[in-house]
Image: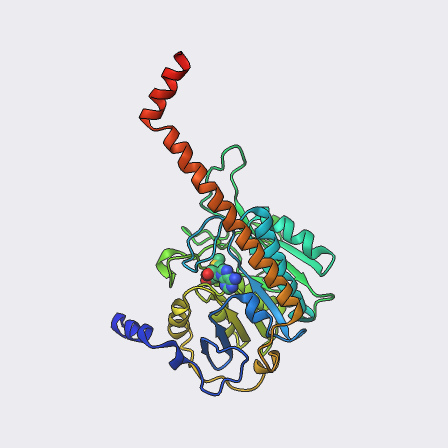
Amino acid sequence: MKATQQLDFLNTKPSKLVATNHGFPREPYLTTNTGVLFNADCLDIFGTIKSETVHCIFADPPFNLGKEYKNGLSDQLEQEAYLDWTKSWLSEAIRVLVPGGSLFVYNIPKWLIHISGFLMDKMAFRHWIAITMKNTYPRGNNLYPAHYGLLYFTKGIPRVFHKLRVPIPVCRHCGKEIKDYGGHRDKLNDAGLNLTDFWEDTSPVRHNKFKTRVSNELKPMIPERAILMSTNPDDIVLDPFGGGGTTFQIAEKNRRYWIGMEIGPCEPIVERLQYFVNAKFGHLSGDELRACFVSDATTSEATAQSQTTLTYAIREARKKIAERKPKLKKKRILRSKKQVAEAKTKKKK
Ligand SMILES: C[S@@+](CC[C@H](N)C(=O)[O-])C[C@H]1O[C@@H](n2cnc3c(N)ncnc32)[C@H](O)[C@@H]1O
């Protein structure tokens, strides 16, 4: 696509991308042949989804590291507030999964420990997948972090599990195989090696060159492996934190239905779907996705409750930040030259 065409496309009003007869309780931002995207808070949309309707959830939430997502929400909540919010959307995720459905949560180990603890008595643990972080950085008095985690849980016994294979790794300079497999090279399957729970052949984020937005985007390989190992074609995949739309691209590519939510700008998702999979907007076919939603927009009791917790958590976190600000200012004023001189003379006296 040429740059000008792309610009024109992005200037298209979102309503034009939506099928007129969409029949969802909330107005989607866009629909494609097999997907629906809502430009909204995920908890709000979760509340309109029926229990036990979705086959796989891939979630890459904000890591609470103070990143700028341009969505008006704080990415630097107090630990308790972040975890309360996390538990709210996790509860909804568990509720909407079909028995045997799979949940993938991508995050840093610090939060995954808590998330695992929360999920442990509600779902069946499958894997903690470590994804190598190539460009690590010093973290004060700690070890250098070198991996992100992808948690994989299922709602009871997994309904689908496909063993995936990966190409036999070769040196990127000379093209020769890196390992000798202890003399058993001839016993290897031609289709490649079995995928393990340590993914060192990818990186946690997409290279800037390929990104459709300024903020983070995952490498498509990450949701693709999750979706391919845990779903069949025509299954329904949900991503509550759409970002730049990586999961939706992969769902389209692999013929899965998808439900997406993103609270921030959705133009990068539109651009990506148009560019990478040439999705046809406004052409939702079949009732598979509509069947997941309640027929009216009333919020379920569980969601109403979790939303109250979330609103409370965010309000409390903002209050704390607001309370902290004047104190910081005060400290700075005290350190002004005049104050320091006065303080010194007072001390001398
Ligand atoms: C880490 S990014 C996801 C990136 C995505 N996996 C990709 O590859 O493009 C997290 C996204 O969640 C969105 N987000 C944060 N809070 C949200 C909420 N309550 N509901 C829906 N989206 C939310 C942010 O705007 C951000 O785009």
